[in-house]
Image (cartoon, rainbow, N blue to C red; front, side, top):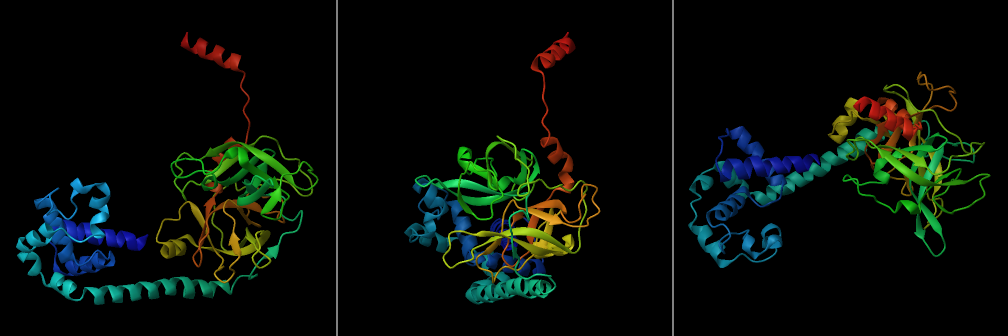
Length: 409
C-alpha cells in the first residue's frame, strides 16, 4: 500500500501536474525525488508519459489520441496498452513540441537509464521487505514462551465458537470460515468482515450459517445432541456504524436460541476499559495435523504484544483501533490464526476480570498477516457499544404509541 501511494504521487504530482501541465515549479531535489517515485510506478519513462498525455489533450477522441474514448471504455483505459499504436499517434507524436521535456536533465537521465533504474529500485524494495519481515520479527519470536501452540482439549476454551457455512449439501457437511467468543447466553462477539463486505453486502447465505460451541475441528455435521457440541443459527448481526475493514470491525451476533452453559460451553468477560498490554496474551488458531488433511483442529498460541508505535512503523498505517501481536507463522504452513477469534489476556487489572485463570477478552482478531504483526480490534474502547447490544430491551408497543401521542398533543 505504501509503494502504491509513492507511485501514485510520482505519476500525479510528477508526470501529470509538473511535467505535462507545468502547474507548478520544482527545484532539482524535488524533481529527482519525483522522478524516482515516478519510476516505481513502472509506467514507462516520464518523457513517454508526457508525450502520450499531451497528445491525449491536443487530439482528444481522435485517432491521434492514445486513449481514444471513441474506441470504447475498455480500450481507453486498458486496451490501448495491449495493441500497436495507431499510425497517427506516432506521426503527430513526433511533431509535438517536447523541447521543454528534452531540455530537462533529470528526465533525460531517466529516459536513458530507465531499465537500470527500475532494476535497482526492485532490488532495494525486495531487500527492504526482507529486512522488515525476517530480521525484526525473527529476533522477537525467540522471546515467546511457546513456539507453536497447544491443541485445545474439550472444556479448556469453553467460550470459543467456530462459525460454519454449509458447503456440501448432499452430505450436509459444514466447514468453518471464522470464529467468535460467547459473551452472553445468546450473543457472540466476532468480526464483521466474516459476514459483510465494505459495502455491507452479505458474504454468505445467512440461513446456511451455524455457530457451534464445544467443537474443536473445522468440519462437522449439525447434531441435535447438545451434551458437548451446541449448534445455533443466526438471527441478526449488529455491526459498527463506521465499519470499513479492518477498522470498526466488531460484530455482535444474536442467535435464534440461547446457549446451555455447562463444562464445555460458557461465556467469557470482555474488557470494560481501554488499555495497552506489554507481555504475552493468548489467541486461537487452527492447524491441519495430517498431510493433505481437509480438517483442521483448534489450537491456542501465546502471542507477544507489540507497542502501537512500533506496529505502525512496520505496517505503515494507523493502529489506534487495534492491538498488535507477533507470531511468526511463516514456517507453520498449515497453521493460522482464526479471524473473529478472541485475544485473551490475563491479570490485566480490568474490573471485568473476575477469574485470573479465565482472563478477559480484550480484542477480536481482524487481520492475520504472514511475517508481519497481526491486528486485533480493541474491545475495551467499544465496551458500551458491545454491552448495549448484548442486552434485550422489551418495549410495550401500546405504551410507546400512547407516549408518542401524549407528546404530540
